[in-house]
Image: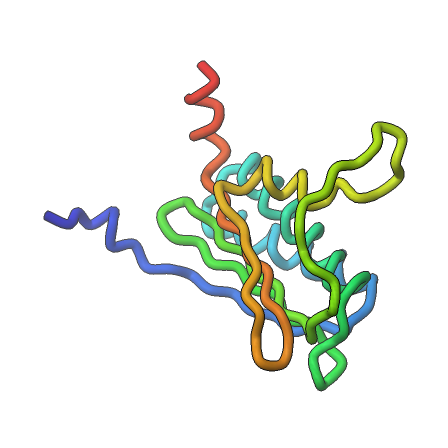
Length: 146
């Protein structure tokens, strides 16, 4: 039997931004406002913002833009779970977590995503790549730690 709570409408927000480092702050701000307006708790908003920043930053640093010179970002909130997605023009690089030295100045982004997201992955497209992550509400982690 389905309850009304399980049938909550998904709210999807999608933006297309220039393939530029400046776009990361813009998308972070939009995501934060959007999720807060939908009533998501502050800890979950913080986690979603950090994951989006990592995925979008990686797309801008390591991948080509989409044919129109942009990168697409989207997020969906349903039943407290936030799915974030970034679509770029692709790259010959293989996306994978990697070990980093303690004093390294980079290379920890996907490790952070792995900690904050319940799952993440990569979808190779005909003309690009999509990286996604699914985040559970922060309260779930807090209750498991108790």
